[in-house]
Length: 136
Figure (cartoon, rainbow, N blue to C red):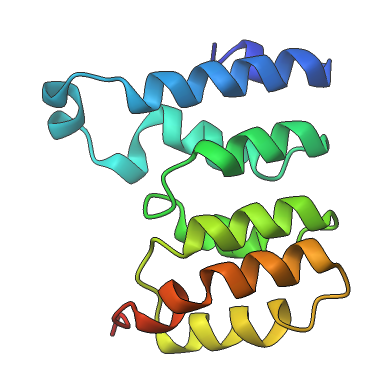
């Protein structure tokens, strides 16, 4: 699947991204314990797919990647060209402990986004974004 995730056709990359996400979430605990999550080949490839030229590939990757294993990449997607990807990124970040600077930057831009879907995702997740403890 890693090979297919580099295919020239966006539809093939999208399907490969879905399978990579499935593999990432359904591995035995022994494999997870043996690998550092951020250096895991599946996670590395999913982070790369977050910058894919295809909106659909980015959408699949952002929807399923573990936000803690790719925090900077997920934060970057909050500035994506497409509002629905920004909204998904914001929703994914609600479950993550952010630094005060990251949280401020996210809220500053997301609350005044020109698209309602992004603003709605921010308003929906606002309690979680404000009440989670800050990282140092």
